[in-house]
Image (cartoon, rainbow, N blue to C red; front, side, top):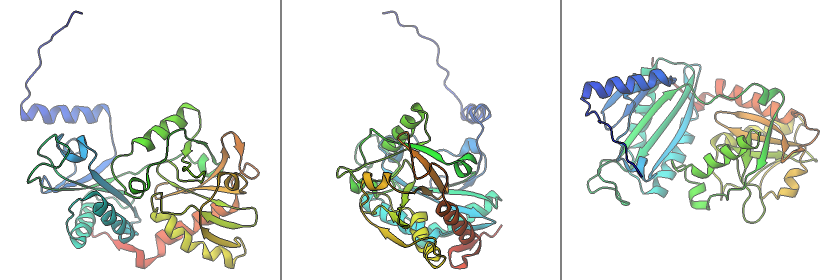
Length: 329
């Protein structure tokens, strides 16, 4: 076969920066501030928010991440997210700055963004230096923080509910499921499969026939007798939002909206018989699922528990002083 060649330009540093800026012009983003331990500071130009191609995070997926929310100029529940981040680092054999250093960098990067509403995502990597399987000898671990607009979902998810399908992709083995690594290929494939089928998301089922989790969110159920049931966290990611909601949900028992709260194995048959199915996560908060594999959940309409839990979480994000960190703008 014929091979067509063309002249490749060797770019100068100034031309590289110009091309990176042109890329962001063609593909605008809402990234407001980025800290890189490799750069030694914060940048606010999205074109400069970069990681070396030979970082182990990039070419081997050897990295972890976590998130937190900025609500009315305060960071919500950062300590719970740092707890999970540190566990993920241990599972991934990654070195981190101290907890105090990470907290300080996150807070100061949020301040540099100037944004009072948004999301924080932060990463740890094994560092650059080779394209091998093991980290490069003497590689300097990386720590990165991004302040951005966050993920958004249509309002109809809350007013009308969303539809999901059982994914054909296998659930991650427990070690990888409970570690929040950058290797989200199964999650990505699940989401793409759902889109191809014209629904909003997917649900993993484990080998025992029990419900796992969704693409980047947890799922929970309200049974016919009024019990809030959440899958056990031994084989799925321990969602910080789910864990907090399980505490907040106790208020619904006193209001006679819930009979009980359980974290347990949930079979597919039991899940399908629920009167409500919930999608839970730091970005989506709480959204009602009204259809699963083409069949209605309950009466096929958003239920009262989804709405009540979302209201409890929104209030907690504004008023739980022990879970809020003021950003020093």
